[in-house]
Image (cartoon, rainbow, N blue to C red):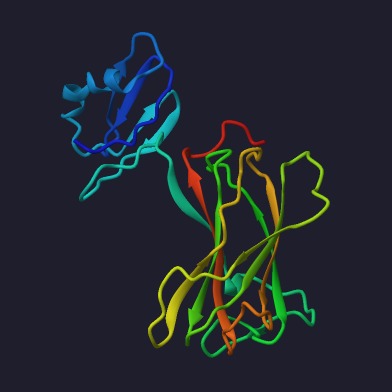
Length: 243
């Protein structure tokens, strides 16, 4: 039988199993909510629908997914994903602090002799595991030895909350991977940002910069930035309410 994504605490009077030929069976449920152990009781009835594509639980449709190895990711698991801002999607505002664009190799070139920065706005998705930490980081190309001092300044505010008066500043000078030679796809990690008091649809205002010329920045050439992104945890398909 197909492997199901399981979500706890569904309520209803039956589970509908849909078949590709448009037929279905409806299995009655006595009481509720539906527990995983209760669901396993229907195993034998489900075996006759080996190619079923989805289940409809109280008007919710959840796709089946087949896996070639390991266990399926369950809806009530918490897993990591990316909130992404690739270099090609960030449009500098036309200030003197803008990095140069490398059209030949693709990426923003951050100067070794001064501070250049990009501006980014993000909204936390409705799939986010509310209150968990987020992990911002920079993807860039390292072409020689040396340290790039990346800096992130941010304000994080909930909807219907006051904007913070000032930015919080965090630096990332340590690379995740050791450099040997050639053009290495490198990552610099900022410290985790605490999301304990933040909610869905909260907004991040961010400035990403290289502090070229600082004593900690010893990388003597342009640093080509490919993407800024934020790892965050998800534990649902979305919220029950729009806000």
